[in-house]
Image (tube, rainbow, N blue to C red; front, top):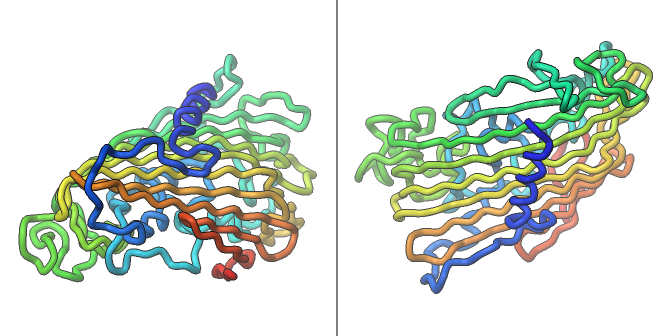
Length: 361
């Protein structure tokens, strides 16, 4: 994947998420008020777009291979809100909290953010990058490439666990996922909405619908409506650079960003709808000390800015939009500082490293 393609996508996405402040670019013309409240959509913060697990990001996402069990994000209704003791998007990825793999032996291919591409790939001398063959899974196409450099900054044609000092990886996930009745066989059967044959609306009556409204794995994420049909287009990208991988390095430094857009049209038991979700994060100067044994270490410096905007519009009604922004700062202590702004409300929190719930004032 060419670097220019990723830059072009970030420029297009800037209209949707300027400076990760997440502001909508347009509104519907004179619609009537919505039957849903903004609070009904907060469950949309608990996950990220499908396929986001294949890009380099601080969010915890579902890979393209896991799309059938990932479900649709639409939030709201009972049991739909995200746990206030958690960070959005599934929480912090393991390497961002110190819960990832320990360093051990092997230098650059072990420990947090270590290693290169998971494919042999083909070296493009013009780009100075190793390019993987594109893969398509469940309607989503994954493209990956990487540039490897040694300690002097010279480009390498392949990753070397001893001499490679920096790795820049670029990833994109694009495609369309279509949901039809009978796809929720993995869901639970609360409310009588389950799987093929018995997958119907509330109380078990009505026409076949997809999603239980409270299903496992994020299916519908708590909305009391059920999905009759839905088609989601996905465009996810990431660009990350990790340095300090060579033998003898005492710390690793990570910088990068990811962006994802999920656009859905469909019909639920409430009526026809359109829904969008935009997700992004920027990692700046994240530093992780290299341990001398197999112990795990957590970041001691750097900042991660994470943001999500979700919007839902039912036919003839005004759009409902919610936003959330999280700024995670590491200062060398065993506690990360987290500032959360959700819509117009801001909280100051802390998060223990390597694990633990948020504590907010």
